[in-house]
Amino acid sequence: MWIVHETLLAKGFEFVRPPAVYRGPLPVHGKRALVEINIPDVSFARRPVVRLLDSSELPVKRLAHLIGDSAICYAGAGGLPLDYYDPGGSILRVLIEAAVALERSFGGKASEEFERELSSYWEGKWLLFAVPRKPEPAIIYADAIDHTDEDATGVVVVPRGEWKERDSRGRAASTILNFSGDLRHPSVFPFPNMSTAVAYIGAQARPPAGWRKAVLAATAAEEYLFLAGPNAIFGWRARLPGPLEVIRARKNGFRPDFFAKALERSLDKTELHRVTGHEADLEFCVRRNLGGDAGLVGKRVALVGCGTIGGYLGRMLVQSGAGCGAQLRLYDTDTLSPGNLGRHLLGFDDIGKNKADALAANLKAFHPDVNVKSFGLDATKEWPELEKADLIIDATGDLNVATILNELFLKSAQTGDNLALLHTWVFGNGVSGQSFLNLKDGGVCFRCLKTGFDGKWRYNPLKDPSSPLQEAPARCGEGAYVPFAVDASVAAAGLALRAALDWAQGKPGHRLRTVIVDHEAGRDKVPWVSPNPLSNCSACGSQTS
Image (tube, rainbow, N blue to C red):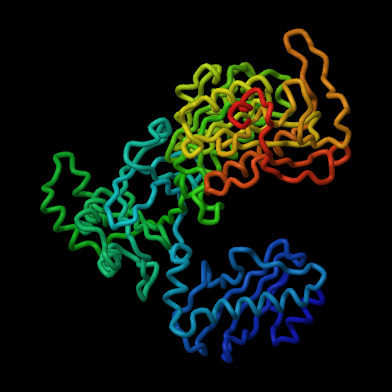
């Protein structure tokens, strides 16, 4: 702390108050701004707060990157690493970044920078906005649901009539003005009342047709009203002045035309209770981390096996777009037993439930808009429905099931352009995870991976291929099982997800992939390969001989 103190004094700052608040000059593009820096944690686990006190010497009067009580937003989306072992240098870095943040408003860029972070300046209570945006200007009618008891995220906005199972706490009509272009900002923001709000909307580029009538109707009903653009989602709930509240509350009603005229005359007295919308629709949630790729959005996926691999894979698939824009179908005939808990996504409350049904409920809890359907059926007997998918994933880890699915896939009239089959399994006692993608484009199939049904694996990841598989003995009510830790299940699921995403992007790459989990028992380097067909393969040998 003494190093920080001496560093700030050397920069012309003065100590203001404990524990560590200083005030001093910040050079900004050759000019001087007066700032206050509050250092709540000298280890920098919490970043210092820099607040602008006086910017009168700066040539730009409208500055962006100021939030809350004139706090400067100086850390980018990736955060700002500050060196615990160089406290003086870290404080200088904070001051430099704060100056750079202010300088972004120079050169006529203030409006651009301001509009990029418009929602931050609105300073309204934030809520969840689960209404997908439209590419064109439109008026969207929605519902605001009280879905939790928390103030911060207690309201979620959904398409009109949706999420009916979640509206026990209340449902209020809402109106959304959807803009195709970025929302601009006025000289005064946030604007204080409905009169300035109407002027703001009218000044936007291409407001939706009929917007004024919709705005006045929402205001009269004291509904939520939102403005949604690519750069920001914010809104308010109007609070009518006293006389209009009295008129609206009359038991014998009122003349709508009279009330409308009275409202028009009272817009400057109509207050706004501000709210800020944070995107939470399913497609936004899953696309956000995919770097612009669509992932599995719109792909029909069937997951066979909801056990130790399938449970984690099901969650990963949904987080990557499965169940968004197309249905995700889950198949499993088994029920969850206490012995499954040590390496399953599902938990104690799911014991005794069908694994597919329980996993479907778990995935719906991830987001109510997930389109998932479960079947406690033998998937190999449901091939006519199964082959309607774009991608079938075998996560059973069962050689018999894999063989049958492989046979059905090879005989299917569907081509690899329309249907893909992906197998994933844990090898040995959790030594590795493997996945194999079949597109029927090279003759190679799952059966080609072994020299015979009881033969050796052609691409064995074990250091000692002759080492025996260790099985736990059977107990009453449970069959024997292969013990391994849950990391192998997650590794196999992650490997399969990557193969699925590569397939979805049209870049399937190597068809057989391996990830080593136990490096003591597994080979150090197992290359990803696209195997050659086995000439005497029982399943596809006649096709490749």
